[in-house]
Length: 264
Image (cartoon, rainbow, N blue to C red):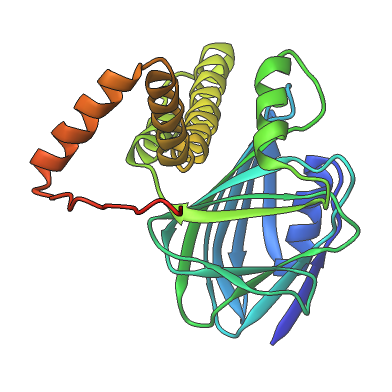
């Protein structure tokens, strides 16, 4: 297995590290980066854009000729990464000895690592892997409210957060919309930033909904029980007797007389 290591830092530094690690040819213009890779052990491309609010967008299209592990340095203010797999599989672990989780085609993942343990990605040999990565900063900018929601939902005290689940078709449509933006310059940049913001909003909304949905049956049952207790507590003896008779008739229960002899 070929082992690679990437230092985190500014976007251009990351791409320069990728260039050295993958032996590729890098071109950069106006915060748009394109790394073309044609070597003995891998081929493909890595493209990325860094926006002025530190939102990142990257697309990976790679095929390795041997198994590869890529260790990525963690740091305290690491972004939250939303990952969308379009083809192949990629595995992830926190540290070289951590549990591996597999991201497959048509699945999405959310990842944040602000701990002292590196994130490690594993790629299989002779299998094409295509995935898109959207990085949302965790430090405040003009999208402060959205960043706050992202931190609340997708970070934890341990510094290691990962979720893998089924991809959202709406988000894949947004990604294609992003890639097909025809406008250049400021107009194109504003349109792309708006699309990426929409994607993050969808992620926050769907994860918040799924989180709350798991508690709905419990909450609803508790509310019903409380309402029933309140209703019964306001009944008088005759109403309670009528309720018991109704319940007995519905369920075809019968009560046998019980004669108790009092002790003399």
